[in-house]
Length: 364
Ligand code: SF4
Image (cartoon, rainbow, N blue to C red; front, side, top):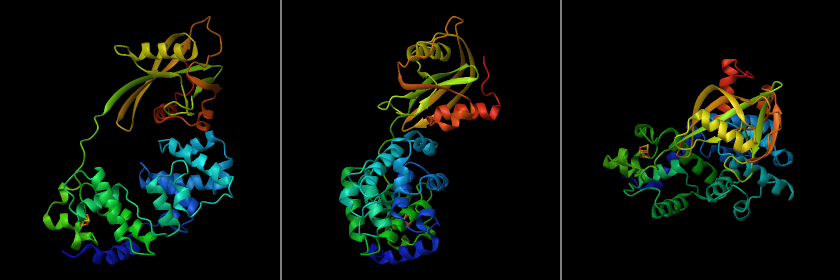
C-alpha cells in the first residue's frame, strides 16, 4: 500500500486530463462558482449545466439577481426543486448588492450569507479564490470511506470530523482549487456509489478498501429513512378562459410558489371528495362538478406524493370571487401565462400533462 500523500500528484494529473469542461470552470468567476455550487446541491450535473446557462443569461451578476423580482427568480429555478436555495441566493445577492456587489474572498463573511454553510463557503473559497480550504461532500465522503476503509457509518459525527480533518491535512498548499475539484470529480466519474471503476482510479494504489477487497462494503450507510406516501388533490377552476391560481404563504412548504387550490386528502376520503373540500376551505367556493384530468407522482426528501388533478365547476349561483383562506394572493390567468409563474413539481407536471395532451383550458 502506498501512503495516500504519494497518490495526490496522480490525482491532480488525472483531473487535468479527465475533468469535465463545465461552464463555471472557464473563468472561475466567484459569482458563477457560487451559483453552480448552490444548484449542484441535490441536483445532477447534466441538469445543472442547462439551468446554469439559462440563469447566467438572465442574471449575469449579483446586481442583476438582486434587482430581480422573486417570482422571476423562482421561475428560473423551477425544475431544480428545493426552492429555498433560490430564495437564499436572491436574498444573499440583495445583501451583497448593498455592499458593493461582489462576493467577498472571506470565509467568515460568506458563512453569514443565507444558504451558505461550511461546505459551500469552503467550496467558494477554494474553487473561486484558490484559498486553502477543504471541502467534503457526499462524493468525497465516499472516497475517504474507501481509501481509509472506514467500517462504521460514514455520516456519523465522529467520521464526519475525521474526514474533514483528513481533507484539511491532505490539501496541498496553494492547490485547493484543483485538489478539491479533483476529489469531487473522482467521486462523480470513477469512485461511483454502486460500481466504482477502480482500474481507472489514480488512488487505487493507496486505497485500503480496494486493497482488502471491501470496496462494495464501503461506505457503511445509516439505515434509510422510510418513505412517507402522501395523496393530494388539486382543482383547475376556469372562468372566461382563465384559470384560478393562488400564491402560497411565505412561511408554508413551497412558500411563495403558485398552485391550483387543493391539498392533502383526509383518511378515507376519495380524491374527488378531497378536492371539493379543499377548494371550499381554501377559497370559500363550492364545487358542484369535477372531472378527472390525471394523477402525477413526484418526490421530495423522503415523501412520495401522488397528486390527483381535476377540472372543477362551481354551483350555478356561485359567482363570487375566491377568498384567501390559505394563500397570500390569487389571480386568473390564461393557460399560456402559467409558464410565467413558479409552481411546485407536482403542479408543473400537471400543467405539462395538459400541454402535451392538448387538453388545456377545457371545462368538465
Ligand atoms: S480504488 Fe476504487 S474504491 Fe478506491 S478510491 Fe479508487 S475508485 Fe474508489
